[in-house]
Length: 346
Ligand code: GDP
Ligand code: MN
Image 1: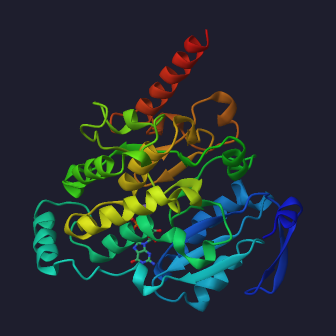
Image 2: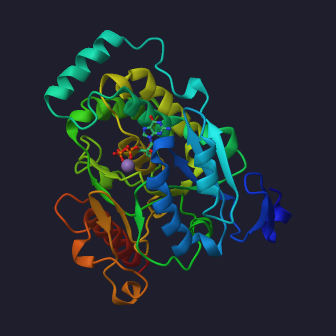
């Protein structure tokens, strides 16, 4: 889309329904859904909520990605839920593969061990592909070339509140590049060597590390150890150019060569979070309190009475201040920085 198209309403042609509709939101942005054909009905339920709570007023396009072709039924039933444009992409095999130098004997042995230890998805190869794709490849898909911002959505998640503003434009106008609604501690058994690899990277490429970073969110000792806090990446509204940056591309390659996506079970959430915490400035990471959301088993529901007027969730069930959440830490750090910044200003 050209700048002039962004300025006005954008005419879109929907090939599936052969209907025409207008993108009203002004950002170069889309929803991204990595999904299986079997997830169709779980996603319709989610998409209905997303449309009702937000997108019927903005008509941001949807980009669905899959490692196998989408069925006609999938396309028909999802495109029918929105006036916005829907696009369906096939993931190129080189973005969903096991690198040649991975020793499959070791992978198999480690998967057996993880199964014995009840590590969630510990013995799943497709789950590893999913995590590696969401970490290092989704933003390279050609259907995303025309966009700057994305909102990741998964089947079965819920949206509880009217979203009367445009989160993409909020990011753009406030120089925010990554946002979340739920944060928590990672299972250490999925990432035994991840932090050592990150430290090695930081020593090798100190120039990529932002001085005004948010390392205190992910570490209690200024980066010596990972405290396992991370943003839950099944919800993300973020800047695609963060992942397309030289720093992140080097970071992903470096981690990928370590083999931990297969030998261990590194998730996209800890890797995205660590990258955001190291490469971004503090103010570039945002907590969207207004967006009530649930991905089983955790929910974010805003407490504020004025926000509750637009929601249908119970704030008592909100995960934010429960023991396993890291959001309290994030908010306290933000508060601390704000107070310090005000003091420093005089
Ligand atoms: P969890 O949230 O960590 O339990 O993982 P999910 O099962 O929700 O998977 C995360 C996302 O990736 C969801 O949107 C799934 O639909 C999608 N996904 C997971 N595995 C596959 C797969 O093998 N192929 C495709 N196309 N999508 C997948
Ligand atoms: Mn999920």
